[in-house]
Length: 497
Image (cartoon, rainbow, N blue to C red; front, side):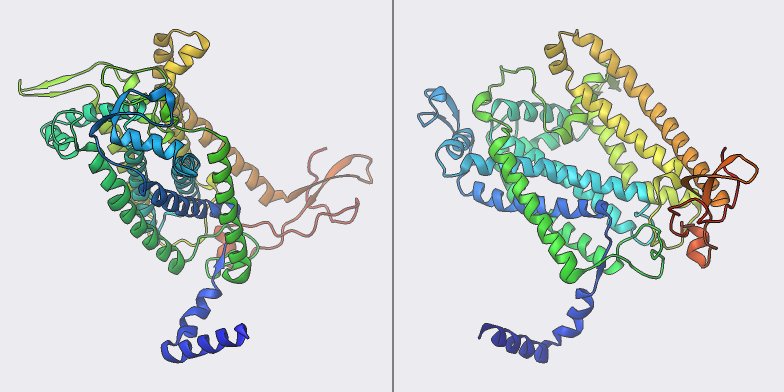
């Protein structure tokens, strides 16, 4: 009885709005099968979990810095003066049904959301999927990463515990280090001297209203761009510029995507229930006079913390009026250069390569050694700075003088990125030579055959003749099936003895 009613309702809607005409092509949309294209969906589904858990937490959180004396469920904090923000965090953790689980799921989702964006951007960068006509989507992706980091920092600072308060104090110093406008930025966020009375309410408004709205808008625009411009695809037997190969949206890809959403949610729930993260009840409320080792932010801000630890104490006095502290360079200039380079890279590569044509086929990293080397160099630079941000923990655990670790990281941040660039370029060019050998001689079959003259050679599988424009630009291996017995295939070259 239900199915005929649904069919009648769909028929009625189609008669009025001609929905089938627009929906049918969308249902036939094809998505690539390669696993790397799912990182964007991983980010999307972790963001959905973020929204759901964040909405639940917002019902019980009190973003107030008014002071009170705690008398609650957690006995270790009884009698301690704290803000209402920290007290409500304790109440969520110990009194609200499922509060601690939801809070930890929310925190894990934030980490995985940013990580998925980073990996997704790396896939796009290394495969050249940012080239024309998809430059706008690359810019949107970089802006989403920047806003996701800001959103994570705002949420991370809300509990007003000792760890988040230390992070806010560092942010206060970074803002004040900006010449000319630093005091105005500080007033905009803190409303006066640190810590003030308004920073938590303002961060709460940013965290639950402004930044999620901007992220939702960017995600919608990004998905619309991907939907109408189609995905790039790797070259293959059927992968060409004029077609799209993969799985249709309905039903195969829909089932795959739904399964991924369920798996992402299940993993996040498991992490929230089994892996402790940000136990603010161990840190206590923020006190400006207190600090401890292992005061690191979440991983996506770790490189900024590491850069500040490595930068020497160089300050500049301008005309006796303005002072540029040392922290300004690693905490402000370096992130601006990093994100500015990411935003402008498509334009720089297009001008350097003089390539203004449209691209629908993804490149293998080995096909563009310089770009691959630059990406590996940037990743190495980031990893060294993350290592530097953990120097106090490493020094404590392994009983190593922290000064030695600082100098090791300083040398590493200067030496390792260029070395990684050279190694990556060398590997790419070696793989290109291997591809050229395959194109010239054929694919190695792994079979050894004895010749009439008494010597042995490896049987080489010849390639089929290349036809079509795509084959000339992106040669693909279209050989016959690899023979199972010696003598099944004519030897094209003597190969290796």
